Image 1 (cartoon, rainbow, N blue to C red):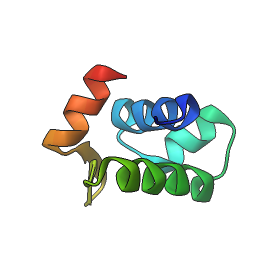
Image 2 (tube, helix red, strand yellow):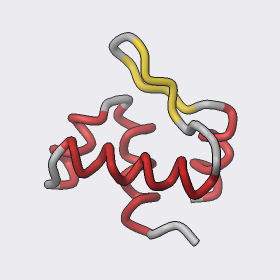
Image 3 (cartoon, rainbow, N blue to C red):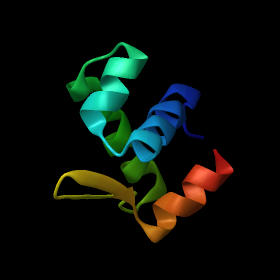
Image 4 (cartoon, one colour):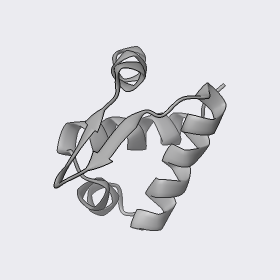
Length: 69
């Protein structure tokens, strides 16, 4: 079962479309946020975010997890 703080971080990234903005808002480092998302992706066995360009967007599976969270 995913940790609540990891799901919270994931939701902030989706809402803000940025790892660094989410980290600032949550008061943690960008590295910590990245590790949390990596942990979620390993747990679910799928990529949850498209990491390209200036925006971070959820994948199809990421959208499902976001709605669940």
